[in-house]
Image (cartoon, rainbow, N blue to C red; front, side, top):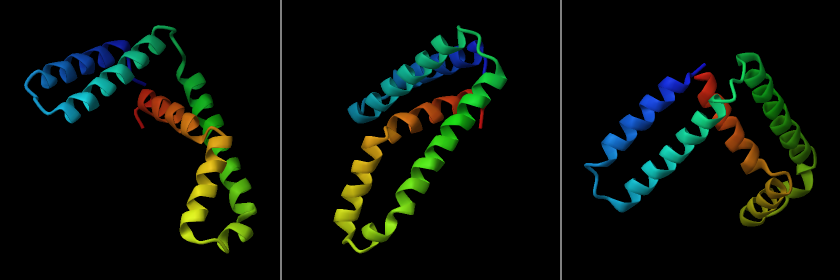
Length: 115
């Protein structure tokens, strides 16, 4: 599991690297990375245990699996649609179940677990 110190060092490293960059798009990526790392730093200040983080990760992983099973269980009707309509239906389905939010949470937990 990552520590507060490791995250702080990574923030410093990213900020130091960004000083020499002039590309605006790349700077925005770096800003987002620093925001993400600061969130992780704040989360680590609550002193979560490894077991808790692992349980949360497993719970979210199971939730994504269930959502996928639900979608692919009813996939017969979607398989008859053209590609664009199928993509739109999947995107709508994912929005209904907050899949993007769940995947972002999994990304954060995965980062903390060093996976």
